[in-house]
Length: 310
Image 1: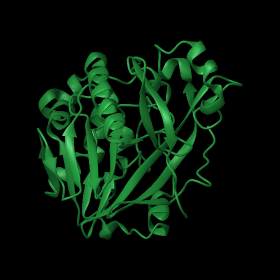
Image 2: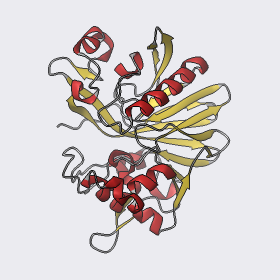
Image 3: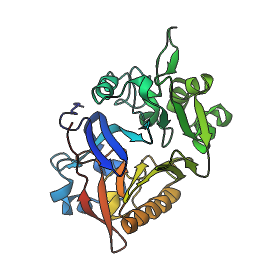
C-alpha cells in the first residue's frame, strides 16, 4: 500500500479560542469498501460516487480510502493531542498495514510546531492499535518502551483499559494483537504514572469534554469542543466512512458491539446536526471533517471542513 500524506499534513483551523491542527501519519487504500462497512451494498457507494471519490472510495477497484491521523488542539494555554496513530516498529503481525511501520510522524508533529515535550494532554478515544501507537517510543533498554510525551497526562477510557488490560486477559485473549498493543503502547504509560482513567464524563478544560460513546469498543469516547459559538465533536471510530453518515445503521467490521455502536452513532450525529457541530472522525481522508444535516432516517453531508495553511 502506498503512503501519501502530501497536501494534508498540518492543516489548521480555529474554532472559538481553540486552534486545531491536523497531522496525518498515512493515507491511502485500506481494503475493499464492502469489507470495511459490510452492511453498505454496492449501490450506496455507486450512487454517491460524485462525492465519495476519490478521497473516500476508489470506484476503479472498490477500495475504501482512509487516513491515519491525529489532531492537535491548542486550548486554554495547553496542547492536547487526540489519538496517536499506529507508531513505529510495532509487532502487529495480524495487521500488515500496522506491522513494523516506519513513519515520520514525530517530524510532522514538529513541523507543525509541536515537540513531544510540549504536549500537556493525550486523549485516546479508545485503545485500538491505530489510536495509541505513538503513546510510546523505544526506551534505552532493548525491547523497552517509554512515553513519547514525557510531560503529558494520558486520558484513557476506564472501560477500555479494563477490557484490553491484563485484568480481562487482554481483550479476553480473542486477538493476539490486543496483548501486544497494550504491552507496548498502554502499559508503559501506566508504569510511568502518566495514565488517568476516566469514566462517565471528563472535563479536560473549559472548551473540551470527553463523553462515553460505547459500542465500537467498550470504552469508546468522543471529545466535544465548544468555544464561543463554535462546536466540534471528535468521534474516533464511531464513523469510518462517509457512507455511515447516510445510514448510521451501517457499522464497520471493527465494531465490537454493533448495536451499541449504532446507538452511539445515531445519538452523536443527531446532536451534531441539531447543534451544528463539526464532525471529526479519526479516519476520513480528503477534508477530514464535515457538517451534517438530518435527511430521512439518516443524515446527509452539509459541508466539508475548510482548512487554512499547512
